[in-house]
Amino acid sequence: MNEAENLERATGPRGRRRVFVATDLGACMDRAADRALMLAAKDGAIRFVHVVDPSSPRDEVTIGRLHEAMTRLISDIRDNVAPGRIDVTGEVLLGAIAETIVRAAAMMRADVIVTGSPRDMSLLGMIRGTVVDNVIRRAPCPVLVVKSRARRPYVKIAAAIDLEGSSRNALTFAIEEFPGAAVEVIHVDEGGREADNAGAIRDRIEGLTAACVADSRYGAPNEGRAISVRLAQGRAASVLLEELRRMSPDLVVLGTHGRTGIDSLVFGSVAETLTALLIQDTLIVRA
Image (cartoon, rainbow, N blue to C red; front, top):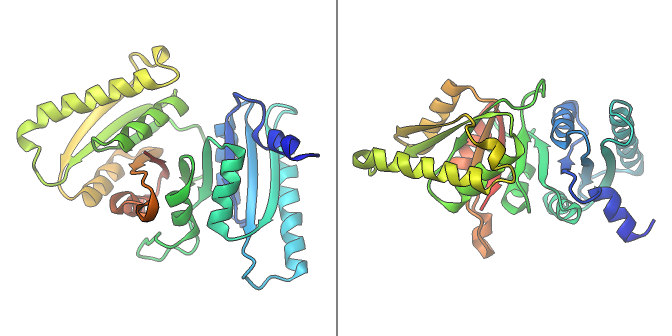
């Protein structure tokens, strides 16, 4: 099979939803796998990838077992989906883990990268420096961090936004990709500077929401959709954690700023804190 055929098999026919799953082949990998199947819907393409760092002490027997585990995973998934409906592939790659994941997802032209919570996150909820953190900082597409079992499609989404372009991208993506879900938008006035203009801020956010609906591929079907706005004041990370726990959504959507050069390493302290501490699945969308 030549490179073009490999790429076509990895991406699927044009128009399919392409889901890239970065898996550690561990005990909880089924959570990300089950959610990926839901995201791929009935005619998508899913590519599972496990990356082995060449600097880690792994012998040939261990590498062989990883290949066997990937083969079993792909076989089990194919046995549970209708033939020809979802194209499922998987492979074990060698390389720097985060960089290899990002490069492989870009080659697939993935619509979303799905991964689990980092196992090396401390009790303080620190995500910085983990593979997931490094993937989020460099990913060519939105990253979904799966924390809960996928018992149903997302039905209640909370989108934490400011008034920047990254928020518009995040909200548009959520509206497009989860058309059956109710969306609640939450905005925090961190410095109290907006207190005297709460009405104007609400109008701006409602206008942003309407623009996101119009920007989505499914603008007309979204008319009249349940999208509400909630305003709060205080320190953004603390207030959002409290509000999101009270709202109890299935999915939290966050926007982060896309930058170039050295600033590309900036994930964003609020998004970083929420991604680490929330118990809900978290979708990070860059500007």
